Image (cartoon, rainbow, N blue to C red):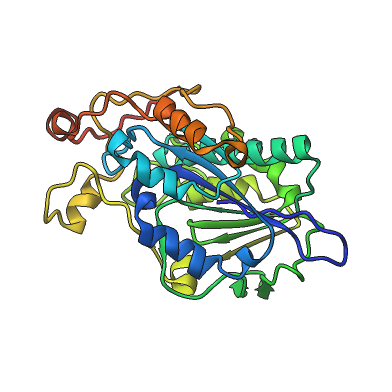
Length: 325
């Protein structure tokens, strides 16, 4: 998700929020409430623009969603009721650098596109950006606050006091990104980040013992290494953040060891594309309820059949080293 703001030198930034990624458990009211009333409650006292880039189709990952169905349309309507701009992605995008987790980079790019396009079209001024996943449950402290970050004793997240120049980026675990406007062009080029050498397994810090693929986190951080400051802290300890999506193909009682064995596994019959099917950027706040419902019906996947998916598609297929295009 992305927080942004336009302000005068004496005013706190107005904020915009862009949630990006697969829907998963985002339709659960408890997940939405924790985001609004726990993590962002004080931020939402300001002027907030809400951006969404949501993947509503079936994920390539064996542990991912099977897709959003028509039966869930009403829940999605409620979840998007305060949205400013919405884009829905129907089919799975590819990944890069030999690691499925880099698939999120494409979605980050689209989110940055929406924000920068809105800024241009509406003559808005953007100060800050925060990215989060749609399926996080927050049970701890609120934002803003004071975050302990590497390279600095503390970084204050009081939005009326945060420096915006020169550009900086804060990674709160692998779940939350907080950055200044000057960092957004780097996000827009994230899928062109430099990959690690899989054959030579270099650099050493890019590879974990026992795992074939390079570290997505290492490559992500390296892409932003030219910024004036780069900080890191642990999101789960700081905000009591929990992922709430469940494996769509898992059997009841599947152990953690079983999930670990499926690391990097893919589903049968789910393809990827460098140009996946998706909606245009839809000006949600300027659409009436009829227009919104018609848009959701147009862009929700039409071919989901969960009964057949759990049989043939849920076989574990360990990845090869090819990178879908």
